[in-house]
Image 1 (cartoon, rainbow, N blue to C red):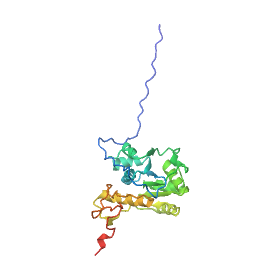
Image 2 (spheres, rainbow, N blue to C red):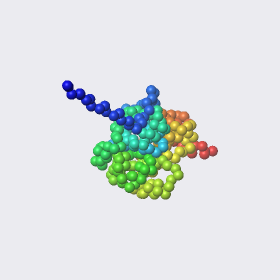
Image 3 (cartoon, one colour):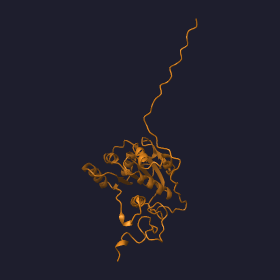
Image 4 (cartoon, rainbow, N blue to C red):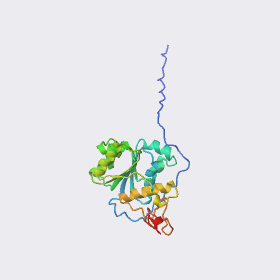
Length: 257
C-alpha cells in the first residue's frame, strides 16, 4: 500500500492594517517650470530640502513645492509618516505620486543613509512646512531619529538656513521654549500668520502669501509668480508687480489719501 502524500498547508492570508493614499482619475495640473528662469542670487547650490510633517496645513508644503518647481529650484522632498494621513484628509487631490513628480528627489523619512543626512552634501537650506510640535521638539533636542530631524540638525550645525512653519494653537510654554531655543541658534520660526493687507480674494491667495513670504526669508526670489500661484500681472492693481508677494502699489495702498 502506497504511503499517502500530504500537501503542505496553505499559507495564512495576512491582513495588513494600513491605508494607501486615495487614487483619483484627475489630479491638479502640473505647474510649468520655466527653463529661462534667472538664477537665484542668494542660493549657492540652487538646492533646498523640503519636509512635510503631520501637522495640519499640508497645503503650505504643497504650495511651496509647486512654487520651487516653477522656479526650477532643486527640491529634496521628505514626507513624514503622519504627513501622509494629513495629506490624504486635507488635500486628497494631491496624491503622493503627483507630489513626487514635482520634486527633484524624494526620500523615506526612515532613510538616514540619504545624502542629505550628511553635512558634506551641499544644500542651501531646509524648509519644514508644516512643522509639527513633535518635529520641533526633536530638532530642539538634537534627536535625529528620522531623516527630517536629522537633516534639520545638519542645517543647524553647518550654519545653513532652516525655516520652520510651525502649526499649533494655542501654544504651551513647552512649545514657546522650544521655539525660543531654536531662534537663538538662528532658526527661523515662521508660523503661517495671514496678512490681509494684500486684500486676498480667497484661501488660495492667503496660502500663497504666507508661502511667498517664507521663501523670501529663505532668500528665494519668487519673481512674477504671484500669491495665487500664477504668473503675476504688474500692470493691474493688486498684481505682483514683479515681486510676487506684495501688491504693485505697496502694502499700505489702502491708507493713502
